[in-house]
Image (cartoon, rainbow, N blue to C red; front, side, top):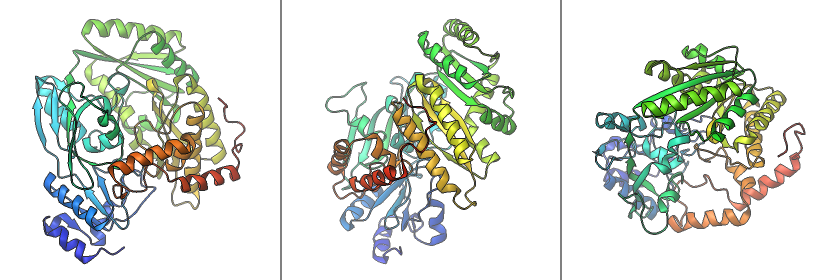
Amino acid sequence: MSPAPELINRLRAFLPPDAVLHDTEDLKPYECDGLSAYRQTPMIVVLPQTEQQIIQVLRLCHETHTPVVARGAGTGLSGGALPHDAGILMSLAKLNRILEIDPLARTARVQPGVRNLAISDAARPHGLYYAPDPSSQIACSIGGNVAENSGGVHCLKYGLTVHNILKLRVLTIEGELLEIGGEALDSAGFDLLALMTGSEGMLGIVTEITAKLIPVPEKAQLVMAAFDDIQSAGNAVANVIAAGIIPAGMELMDKITIHAVEAFLHAGYDLNAEAILLCESDGTAEEVVDEIARINTIMKSSGATGIRTSRSEAERLSFWAGRKAAFPAAGRVSPDYYCMDGTIPRKHLGQVLSGIETLSEHYGLRCMNVFHAGDGNLHPLILYDANTPGELEKTEEFGGKILEMCIQAGGTITGEHGVGMEKINQMCLQFKTDELQIFHGVKAAFDPQNLLNPGKAVPTLHRCAEFGAMHVHSGSEKFPDLPRF
């Protein structure tokens, strides 16, 4: 849709000329996020540099009934920042200042465009760091982390974004400023901080985050265990948790992922293994020595065919680098990949992986499985070629079936990537009509005109009715070999 000249002129009245983009070649870089399967060219892109400029953009959108979508670094994986064709895409990339590091309070006050890793870099001279570490932490922004409630490989012990922030400055669609949370560990009233975290930019625009910092552990060490079947690796995960150990991180990769990562990064992974489990301990030197010994014993008793323990910090980081390179490694072995994100109870890990294998054979598409094994957060990467007619549609159907298995197993359709556009239909399967109406009620309380990131995360009841009819018509028993929980 061609932008209205009047809207452009009104934006340029308070934004620099180069902060208002409307030519096609300038808009194209913003048409998708890290999940490139969905693309939409925005009508206008704005790049505010101050909170006051954001207020003015929002007030203009509210006055003119113009949809507005907030965007961070563009590393999202669910289509959550997909632009609106008749709306404004507001990039927060220029709000990238670290405003304050308080080593005594152990907090960092930052703008939303600050990179995740930059917070830890700034805090490290004080012996502190920011715990959530998504694989994209070198590029992803903290505002996007709040929008999607991101986690990372250390979320098992240290939690997701929601567990590591104290306070938000948020702007409503009317341009009203809200301060949610506080400097203390708790604040009075409803927990709006948790509500806003993971809301995917549908309730307000975050302009400032106060994040918790924690001391850098005295010591960290990693056990890498190889297994000759993925079920044994899954059992090892359950055995570690059953022993009362909460590792700093526990990640699992299957054979196809191991080979892709090793060819890409040469991390020292066992190419004969069917699965590799990475299990890290951190804390005082004494704690780590004891915990690593216990982890090694559990891995052996769980059937590990090979065990390596990091002998240096460089080796520990090398083992983790392989895991964090899984996504780019997938891009090296396939023209395209479709990254899913679902969470299941750990006890169903083997069954769900078996079901994914059955689906892979049915659709004739390879699938790399890599996930936060300790909390059951799966990240299957379906490999496909978008240039092959019909293959994207087949991939989307494959991904939808994985999410349905997660629901059936008592899990959920997302762990940290959000719902966005990718999983909006599966929301119809996970939640009942009454629950969806409550979600819409919350949205309406913050944004009655439905202007903030419209059409994402929470499906309309009409959409669910259509999807339900289509789902029933296609037959829920299409894959009788899949596990039944």
